[in-house]
Structures are given as structure tokens and as C-alpha cells.
Length: 158
Picture (cartoon, rainbow, N blue to C red):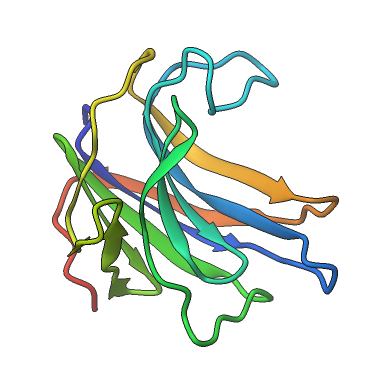
């Protein structure tokens, strides 16, 4: 399949009343990591499409641990149910849908795009992909199910 593919999963990103939150979503173009090794920083290359507990989706350069594209926060988001997050990756671009809706991202220069150009990054790209999880504060509980990786196709939403 190479490094052009679609990766989709149903993800749950809970939060609590104290403001602690979680993120989950697909990562790609990364290095092979050892047990208990994270996907951020160090020799990691790659990108991570993160859904957070507020419903905002961010695309992160995992080598620099820096966001370069993000959506606005939706007016309402149910953090107690699973949401389908899909990323379509080909060459140097990525698109994403959330619950079947094609996302429009705000780029670091203030423009918007549905197809985001991913910047060059340092680090090792061994072509790995998967689902990453992270928490903000003493909370966990993020989950993923129904992981599907398919041949690349552009996203249009449905």
C-alpha cells in the first residue's frame, strides 16, 4: 500500500468537569517505535490527525510536536460517544472527515483548506501508521474501534 492510504477509526475522547481532556486519532509517515515509546519528538517523523474532547481536529508534526492545521471548535460536540475520524494521505497532502463531513482546516498563515499540504519534517519515516492517544491531566479513557486502512481515495464527505 505504501504511504498513500486512508485510515479510519471510531474514536472516543472523554473529558471531565475539571477540564481534563483527551485526544485520539490516526498518525502516519512515522518511525518504527519500541515498546512504551511515544510517537512525539526524538527521532519521530510523521503527522498525527487528533480529535480532542472539544470536537476540534488538529494536524500535528510529530517531530516538532507542533500543530500546523486545525479546525474551529464546533458549537456542540458529544464527548461521550464514538466519532468516526478518517484521514486520506497521499504524497504531501492530507484530508480528513469527522462523522462523514469533510473538514476545513485553518492553516498557520490564516488561510483555510480542505486539502492540507504537510510540511517536510526531520526524523525517521519508516512508513508506520496507527492510532495515537494522549491525555491532558489525570484522565484517560480514550478508545478506538473499527480501524480500517484502505487504498488511497480522496475524501468528499457524505
